[in-house]
Each structure stands twice: as C-alpha cells, then as structure tokens.
Amino acid sequence: MSGTMNGTPDSNGDNLFFNGAVKFQVMSVRIVEEAGQKKHVAYTICVRKEGLNVDPHPAVIERRYSDFLDLFLALRKEFPSLMAGVSFPRKVLIGNFGPVVIESRQKGFELLLGHAAKDEKLNQSSSLAAFLQNAEQREAQSWMMQKRYDLAAPLLENAFRLLNKLYTDRHPYVIIALCRLVACCAADSNESRSGGRAEKFAELALRRFEAVSDADLLRFYIPLLQLCVHLWWSLGKDKQPITNRLEDLKLRGIRVDGLPSLLDAMLEMLNC
Image 1 (cartoon, one colour):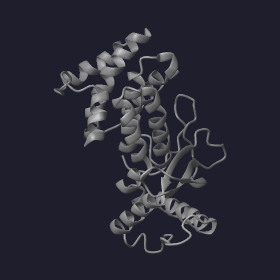
Image 2 (image 1 turned 90 degrees about the horizontal axis):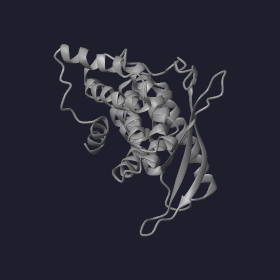
Image 3 (image 1 turned 45 degrees about the vertical axis):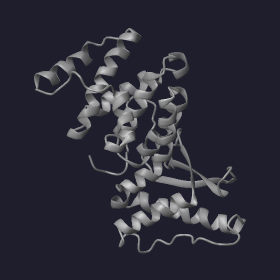
C-alpha cells in the first residue's frame, strides 16, 4: 500500500494519471477582506503531473499564509533532519500585501510543496495530506449536510484527482477520497446533472479495491458494494456479480448486513 507516484493510466481509458513529477505552481493571488476578520492574501495553487502528455485534469486549491506555515511547522517537527535545509518566508509587520513580499512567498510555497512531494517520508505525512484536502472536505461536508451534493461533488472530485497525483492508485488516502466522491455522486438524485459520475467513479472504485489488502479499508468496501447493487439496479445493469461478491464475503464470516451506508460512513469519518 506504500509508494508515492502513480505511473499507470487509468484503465477506463480516461488517462487521468500518468508518469511524471508533480508540479505545484502558485497561479494567482487575491486579497480577501471578510467582515469581522483581518484581510489576508489567498494563494491559488495549481497541481499537475508533468510528462510527455499534458495533464488533462490539473487540480486547484486555495490556501493562505497560515496554512503553509502550519504545514511547514508540522513537517519540521515530525522530520527535523529532512526539513533542515528548507527555509520558509517570514512574517512581516509592514508591507504584508506588497508585490515583493507576495512574490517571495509564492516561490517559498512552491519550493516547500515540491520538496514535500518528492521526499518519500514527507510525502506520506498526514500533515501534507491534510493540507491538500481538508479545506475542500470541510466545505463539501457542509454542502452534503444540506443535501447539495451537486455542489459538494466537484470539490471532492478535485481532492481525489489531486491526491491521486501524489499517491498510488490504491493508497488509503486515494481510496477513501474516491469512496467519498462515489457516495456523494450517488446521493445526487439528478443523474442527468451528475453526468454519470456516480457510475464512472463507482466502477473505478470497484477496480481499485480488487487489489487492496488493507483490512482497515474493508469497512468502506462492503458499503461500496451495497451502493453499487442499488446503483446498478437503477441503471438497468447486471448487479449479480456484485451481489456474488457480497455473498462470498458473508460466507467468509465477514459482517455484511446492518452496516452504515457508504455516505453515512464517509460523513461519520469527516466528523471524527
């Protein structure tokens, strides 16, 4: 289950993921002024794979200085020797929004993320994974609690694609992000609006789970199978192969009935 880079095109022919280094680039900045809060600079980071082919699905996230600082301090505390040569842009009391300071920070942030992505130990840090996805997960969860799955799904898809640029197809971070996306898309009752994403990502999740040996992920596999049984039925597809998988698990003494749905399991995980 370890490994940092995914070098295999997705088997559905979409070629979502391919060989190449991960590149982080601060594409733009904006000054944010919110009522009752100090204004701050938001940095938009584009994350893409580099290689012979152009990455068709670059991921985009927005973070502020304090987010980068938290990541830097967490990595330095956990891996002091690996972070010894990494500098971080200092806080300034005056001129915080000036172009020179902003440009200096852009370069520092790109170097930090590039260093963390390339080093195998830093790459596996939960602090990096949290930096890359937590903000979008929180926003998506808020929409999901309001049953606005159409607004949550793009955020979760972006997080899934981003993580799958840094980690192997069957890494727990990627599998969980994919299950979260499947649950959200399947919950959207407007199939035409979802553009068939529930079926597409559910099929991808089933393929990914075929080679997964992490017992901790089994709690998501069974709800995924049960979701697919209902989804396949609604789409007029043959659900018998999936039903057979569930029966096989039951014969092996694995609890299948009475488990939370995939959506409930994902929401519960986000609340932990």
